[in-house]
Structure formats: structure tokens, C-alpha cells
View 1: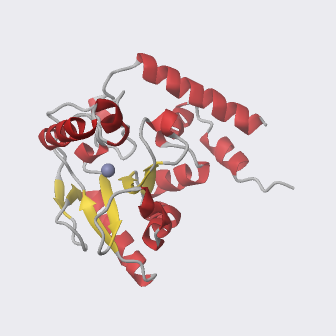
View 2: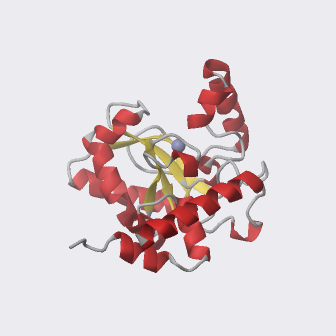
Amino acid sequence: MVLQNIVSVLTLSVTLLQGSMNVAMPDKNIDGTLFLVNRQHMVTEQYIPQVRKTEVYGMSQSMRVDAATALEAMFAAAAQDGIKLATVSGYRSYAKQTTIHARKVKKVGSESADLYSAPPGASEHQLGMAMDLAQKGSSQLNGGFGNTKAGQWVDANAYRFGFIVRYQQGKEAITGYAFEPWHVRYVGKEYAKAIFDLGEPMELYVSANRLAVCDYLIRQANEVQP
Ligand SMILES: [Zn+2]
């Protein structure tokens, strides 16, 4: 009960903050792995991370250097488990995101587009720390990925390599995005494990971290019920 109450309060505070805050996070943290980007915390056109090509199967894509190295380790481990992953979309510049979003809005209207596509400045892909994944042989990005062997492997194992499945099912009100089992975000191993253990979106983790209640929440979330 206590856990549920704290999670509810945090959820409420995140929701309230999103209603009133429309500011970028301080630049000094922008290269940190826990830098939060969403529609309320946007980055400017000027932010261009240092990226390199990922050397894995899939479309030629780039990521920030630390994220690329982690992604390669994840692909190698997946392959050992018989899982064939493919990259679909990694780093995207502000200009590229502008084009993609405009195309989506034209196609399905702004309301539907906003569920899946970020406006320029609000995409984690601009940080170079996000990658859209597919099962080898399929480049479809849809909820069906979550039901594939590859999607289930990613859901269960990504944290071991420093990634989180960023937009979870049932958390749309907090993340502002529909369930995207294919989109992973690099946060580093330590944060990824904590966020995985917490079972809540990054927005909530960041708030809990500020309030220094993460460890408590994770203990509660994982306590075996008698
Ligand atoms: Zn994505």
C-alpha cells in the first residue's frame, strides 16, 4: 500500500510538472546518460552529440560512442541466445526529426502522429542514445515486435547492457507516448538496472532519484509477497 501511494504521488508530481514546465534541462547534464528528453524537456537544434556508426546487423545507423559500444555488446549476447536483432533507426538530427514529424502529421494528423512521433527537439534519437530495433528480416516497427522472440528478449535483457525499453505499456500518461517495445534508450548499466527493477518509466525514476527514494521503492516493488 505504501509503495502504491508513493508511486501515485510521484506519478502525480511528474504529470503536474509536465503541465507547467516546458524548459530544457541544464546543458551541463546533456551528455549525462540520465538526461531526460520528452515533450516537456526539449533539446535545441544546436545539440549535436558525438556519434559513430554501430557495427551490427541492420540499416546503417549511428549512436553516441558509449551507446554504440553497449548496443554491440547487446547484439552479440542476443545472437548467442539465438536472437537476431536488427537496427532500424538510431541518431537523428533536429532537422531530420523535423522532416519525419512533418511527414507523419501530414499522413495521419497531428493527434495520432503525436502518439508515436516526437516533434523536433523532443526526441531521444537526437541525443544519439536511442535505437529502434527489429527482428532480423523485418523492419516493421509496431506493437507486434513486443510479441516476437526478439522483442521479449530485449524486454528481459536490455538492462544488462545499459538500455531500457523507454515507452512501456500502460505508462502512456507519464511518458506521453504509446507503447513502443522496439525503442530502447541507453542510460548506462547502473541506471538501467534500477529503472528495470523499479518497473516505472524514466520520468518517474528521475523524480524518485531527486527525492532520494529510489532504493526504497525498488525494495518495495521487488518484495516477495507472503
Ligand atoms: Zn524510437
